[in-house]
Amino acid sequence: MRNRLVDTIRNFAIPATLFLGSPLLLAQTSELPKAAHSSTAQTAAKTSDLSGIWAITTGQPSWDPSDPPGKKPDQLPMTPWAREKFRTVRPAFGANQTFDNPNDPTEKYCDPPGLTRLYNFPWQFTIVQTPASVFILYEYVHVWRVVTMNRPHPKDPDATWLGDSVGKYENGALVIDTIGLNDKTWLDLVGHPHSDALHTVERLRRIDHDTLQLELTIEDPKAYTKSWTSKRIFKLSSVPLGETMCSLSEIQAFQKNIMDRTLPSAPAK
Image 1 (cartoon, helix red, strand yellow):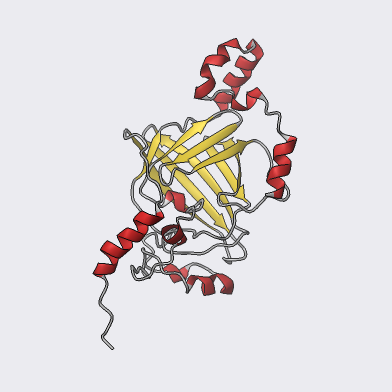
Image 2: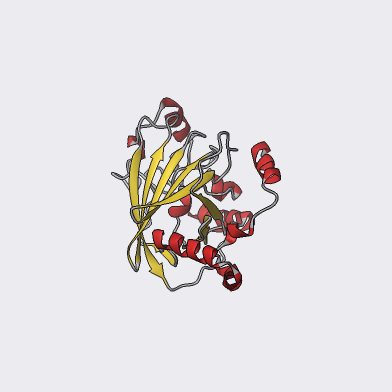
C-alpha cells in the first residue's frame, strides 16, 4: 500500500490523454488536434483487436498442460514448500475433489480468485483497449484488471490480489507481464499453490474473428522447479455480461442445504 500511495500522490494530476480512445470519451476526440488524431490512428494500427465478450470453450480445472482435468495434480514439479502446502488443500475439483469441509479460499471466504483462476471459471470476460491501458472485465465476481501499456514494472511493487500488469503488442498478440502478486490464492481449481514470487506472461491472440487464444506461462521459483506454458481457447459470445457475485451467505447456505446432505453420515459412536 505504501508504494501505491506514493504513486497516487506523484500522479495526482492525471493527464486527459490517459483515456484517449476510450468509448466513454469518444465524443470528445473530435475536438483533439490533428496530431493527436494521427497518433491515435498509428497506435490503433499496431494493436490487435481483442474486443468482444469471450466465453471459455472447455472448463479445465488445472493449468498443467499434460493434465488439464487435474487427475494427477501431484505431478507438477513442486518444491518441498509447495508440496507441503498442496497436501492441505481440499478442492472441489480434480483427483482430490471433496465437498466435505472444502477450504478453497474463494468458496470459503469469498476471497478474490486470483489472476490465473479467473480463466478457469465458466463465466465470460470482455477486453477494452485504449492506447494507454487495456482493461479486462471478468463476469465472475465482477473483477476487473488494468494492464498499463508500454511501461516497466515498478522496482518494488506492492503484493496484491491481481499484481502489477504491464503490456505490449507483439506479433499480433497482446502480451501481459504480471508480477507483484500475493500468495493468498490458488493457481487453479485443483488447489495448486503459488508464492509471492509468481510471475505470469499472458499472450492473448485473436486467431480468427470468433476465437481468442490465451497462452499462459507460469513461473514461480519458490513453488515450482521449472516454468510451464498452457493454452486456453475462448469463443466470441453474443450473451451480455451478467451479475455473478461472490456471496458468502449464499455459499454457506448451498453447502449446508445441498452439499452437506450428499455426504455420508458420520458413523454412530
